[in-house]
Image (cartoon, rainbow, N blue to C red):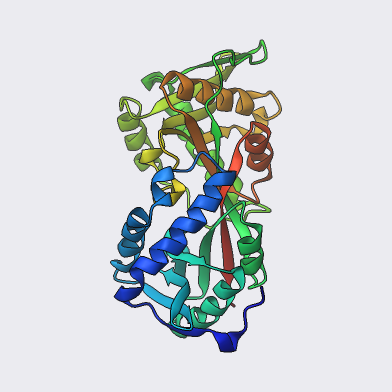
Length: 327
């Protein structure tokens, strides 16, 4: 169905819109879960999605719009801002921040919202879109958004699954004796992402901060630190934990009872030995042993090594983070 601009009324989101918006969002999530069963079934109920919408609106930076046709709500869009120091002048449409009867309605909502956001100087726009909703992804793509980041999940492996690294590799738990190589490995990913084709601007943390965090996290039961050794040298690391530790996967974007592949890095000169895959598989085994049904991870789309590795290990996209920079 084609949506005409004249048939829609776009206006600021009102508290009286919450129930209808929650119903639209629950319906979107129900369709999403049909394709991605890892997602939480709790959000197929409007009472749960309403809480997600209300949490967005409670943010002091929130701005929202509703689309109605003949008095009935047919779409909504809510944006919030994050720290400018990290993201520049920005706005985020989070996973519960948009839903519509037809994808084209989101385009009309964004046209109104973007006028205000850009007028406020907020020119970095991000949106989390269900990865399997081709119509909705296309609607955002045709608004000049491009894919920047992927959230993904896969089932915990069966009991028959094990890690079989190359004979010259050893995968083991990290200890306090590994802090020095771990400090080096903590800078590998941000330095890698700073290069082509990612060009991330996130800085490497100071050594003192990395050491302090490692000393704390290595003895914290929340984290499962692993290292890969080759000829007696630590060349890689990976971290597993509960997905609940992640601030980037919440609500509709958090599969229930899921582990999290939180970090993985291999020294540049040691790539090609299979350490990255062996570490990733070891986190999968840990997630099964810890009783998780699913394991999730996320990565920059332009991180070619991660994209190959995690898709190759069976992770399937759940949400696509799309980005538009207005220069």
